[in-house]
Each structure stands twice: as structure tokens, then as C-alpha cells.
Length: 308
Image (cartoon, rainbow, N blue to C red; front, side, top):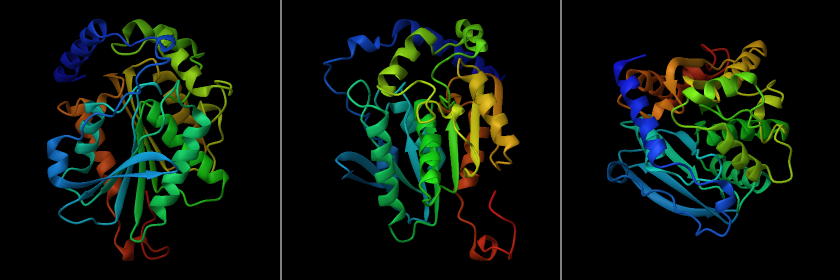
């Protein structure tokens, strides 16, 4: 673990103690939260459009210097109940900085107001809207924590419907089993500087609504991974989600999935948001490589290497 990661982890633990998450039972009747403002740097480099699909808002950021046909759909985390935060924009910024990638950020309805079924209906509509646009050559769907769960679940839903799949899926500390039944979850809990099992599971239950926590759309670990596009798991070890994310990565490997596991034993939940650390920079470099649109000579079957 790098020195910067160790220092950042301690700072995260202190911030979590000073600003604990609001219990889900206290969220009913709240004023619905707005997403964080897009940072000035991203607004300078990208033209921003706010539109609606299936009655829900989404943000599209198109590079002012010219789009290259690559697209990133980013699904933010927050235990299904919290809005898009400045840290999520930091991740997006690092992934697409100085690229020609267009970014789509669907603002799914949070729990307890929203739930898993309407969430996936919206994401499927946002996906269909994007891939119907001309020049959508390469699409990577990425998400952190709850958003990583949604990214994987969306790929499963698209596969089952026989629709076009993302070229790659990326889960930053994905919440692949919100039932938290793996014995290692409680063992890691005291060492996780950010998450608490007793707080997170009720939030996931609010999102699941009438579905079981082991339903594959709620917890993709219980789903079939065959036929998925390459799924890349970026995971830190000081995270209550680590054991399940590693188990999911093993399932993918056994199925012959071409995705990669990037594991940092000393890193915390969604460590890629700590963009100043070498661990985060390694993860960002990997994801940026997935966004590159191959030349036609390489991308056509039989003319060169297959897509990674």
C-alpha cells in the first residue's frame, strides 16, 4: 500500500466518523436530493446536455475538442439512496480527461423513493437511446459500489433480452451481494474506513423492495455470468464488499470472461476516487485503455486481434 493511500484511508475514516450516513428509515419523506454540480473543468472540456429518457433525467457530456465514437455510461454509487457526489465526478473526469469519449450519466431514481425494477427499466431505456445514435462505436458501462452492481445487472438484462451488449463493463468495488452473508464481511467490517454492514444492508433492502436480496438483479453474484461482455472488477481489500467481489471475479474467470481483476489489498472502498494515489492511477489507466476505439483493420473479425 502506498503512503498516499494509507494517509487517504485514515482521512476517509475520520470523515466517516464526523459525517455518518443517515439511516434509511430517516430518509422517508425527505426532500429528494439533487446531484452534485458538474465541475468547472469538465464543463470547460465538455458540452453538457441535460435531457430525459423514460421520464428520468440523464446528463450527456460531449468533448468540445471532438468525439471519437467512444462512450462511457457512468452509474454512480451511494448505497442506492445517495445522489451523485463530487467524488463521482472526479472519477469521470479522470477516466475521460484528454480523450474523445462522450459520457452519459443516467440519474436513476434513488431508494426509498425508487426501487430496482424501475431503476433497470430506466437504464435499459437509456441504453437503447444511446446505442440507437449514429457513431456509437464503443461503449463501456462503468459504475462504483451500487453503480457497479447496476452496471453488471444491466449487462445481464441486455444479454437475457438478446440486445447489443456493452464492449466492456467495469465495477469499482461493485456491490455484487448486498445480502452480506459471506463470513468475511463481518471480519472486514471493523477495518473498513467507509462502510458499515449494518447501515448498508437496510439501504439495499429499500432498493430491492419486493425482491429478495439474493435476486440476481439485486445481487449479481447469484446470476449467470455466461455470455457477458468482459467484466473488469477494481477492488480494494479494506472493504466489506471485497470478499464477494473477489468471488464474482473468480466466477467470471471460470466462465472464460475476458475481463480483468485489479485488486489492491490495502485500498479502501472505491479507491479509484482517490485519484492522487498510484493505486487509483493504475486503475484509471486500465479503464482508459478500454475506451480506445480500435481501428477498423484491427476490429474486424479475421483481420487482427479480437477485442480484449
